[in-house]
Image 1 (cartoon, rainbow, N blue to C red):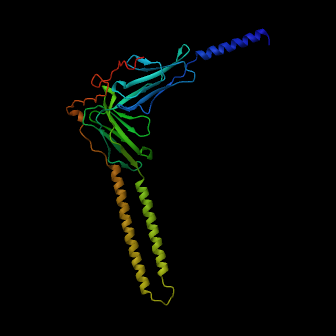
Image 2: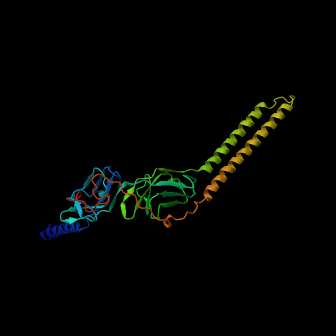
Length: 318
C-alpha cells in the first residue's frame, strides 16, 4: 500500500473515532429497590445503571441542590425528608450523559389509612362495570389506586374526602388485589398508609352455571332412562300395571326437576342482569362541607420540623 493510501486510511480511522466519541451518550436508568413506595422507617436502595466503563456516577435530589457522586444510595430507614424526586447521570471522560428519568420516592404511613370499597360489589361478571371508591375522613385532595403486579398507580384528583375509580367492560385481567392511598397536593410525596386490600374477582358466573345445570340435567335424564330400561318388563305376558306406574313417577320426577332447574337458571340470569344495570347512587360532593384540618404527620426519628420535608437536607449532601 502506498504512503498516500496509508495516510488516508489512518485519517478515516481517526475521523470515525472522533465521530463516535462526539455522539450522544445513552441515558442511564434509576430505580428504587424494593419499591418507590417506602413505609416510614423501612429501608430502600436507589440504584443508577449505565453502560459498562462509566468513569463517574452522580445521583442528585431535585429541588435541594444536593448530590452524591455514586451509583448506589442506601437509605437504611425512610424519613419524610428523604421523600422527593431523584435523577442520576454519569460521566465518560469529559462528557456527561443525559439525565435519567425522574424517580419519585414516596414516604407512606405518614397519615392514617383510607378505606377502599367496590360498588356494586367485589364480584363482577365479564363485561360488567364496577367502581372502586377510596374514602377518608380527612380533607385530602389527591388519591392513588394500586393493583398488585402493576408498575404504576391510577391517580384521581377528585375533591374532597373520596375518589372514584370506574372500571368499565371488566375482563379477567382486572381481577386482583387493590389498595389506595390519600395525600395532599401541598405535600405530594407524603402519603397515607395503604388501605386494607380489596380482592376484585371476575368470574364467568352465568356461563359456568348454565354449563353446570345442563350437565346435571343430562346426567339425571341418563340415569332415569337407564333405570326405566332396567326395570321394564322382559316378557310380553307380564303385568303392565307396575311398569306404567313407574314410568309415570319417573316422568313426574323429571318434570319437577326440570322446572326447578329452569327457575334457578332464571333467578341467576335475573340477578346478573340486575347487577349489570345497577349503578352507584349519586352523592353530594363533600367539597360543599367545611373541611376539617389535615391530620398531623407522624413524626419520624430524626425529623426536626414536625414532619415537613426538608428539601435542603444536609444528610444527602456530598
